Image 1 (cartoon, rainbow, N blue to C red):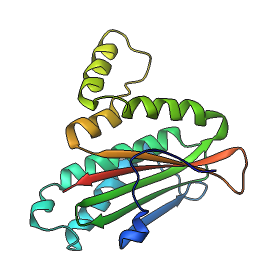
Image 2: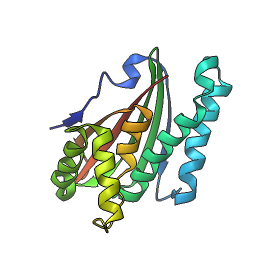
Image 3: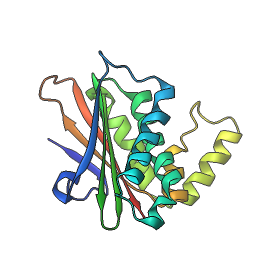
Image 4: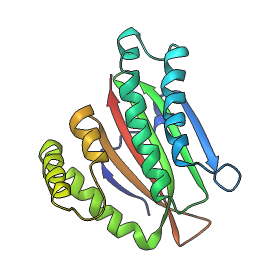
Length: 180
């Protein structure tokens, strides 16, 4: 059974065209430095293809930053054989979806973490987390998604789907809606 947290509208494929890259990590591992390359590729492609109007072109940096954060998290926490990156254009902006593998045993912990992100005001949560980190924190910064929501106005949602091939795995899709 699928679980959805946050705000996920209709799938991007139903809303129009999408650009999808899927990385088979056994054949093409993604190193940390490649996260920015992937994000830059998408933002540059959207500009060059004309998918963005003149005003949205100025937001190329925002698109790259948001997508880089999503890809970095997928790489950092991936437990599966692949990572997929999808960008689709909608009249109100972009839908950025990054999917990766997650061990079923980690699903409840990850859900609880994401639930706490969407339970309060992103700006207040971000300030609290920055203060906590300054005082020694808990080992991880934890400010990436909060920065996207607070500073970039991104609406986040997550879809957890059981893996049909491996009952011990879940596909986690992080969906970011970015208004342009």
